Length: 112
Image (cartoon, rainbow, N blue to C red; front, side):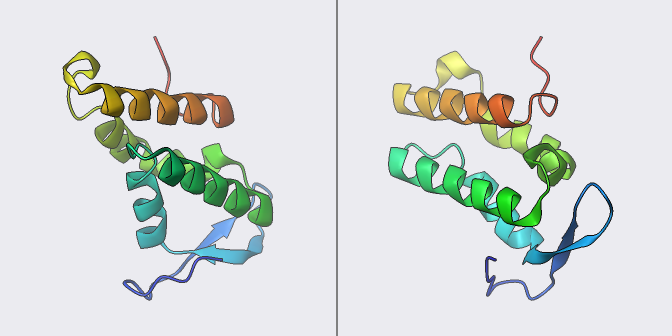
């Protein structure tokens, strides 16, 4: 689905039934998408959410399954500092990204 020029290594995304799906995404492409999930630009955040929806729709796998290996990097990307110390556009971006993740993958990042 996403052609990655930087890293020719491909990772086959398996559905929950264990079968290979037709769509393939590399780890580098997925990392790039996740790094832009909390962008301060609303258009970039929208495009990333749309790309993740397309990937999960085409591979018949859930977003939680797709991102389960990347929870520590997601936490590092979303919370590099305390939320109240970030500038307002960064706070909005982090809250928007967190709301999307909690909505689409409720068990991925537990909120307590």
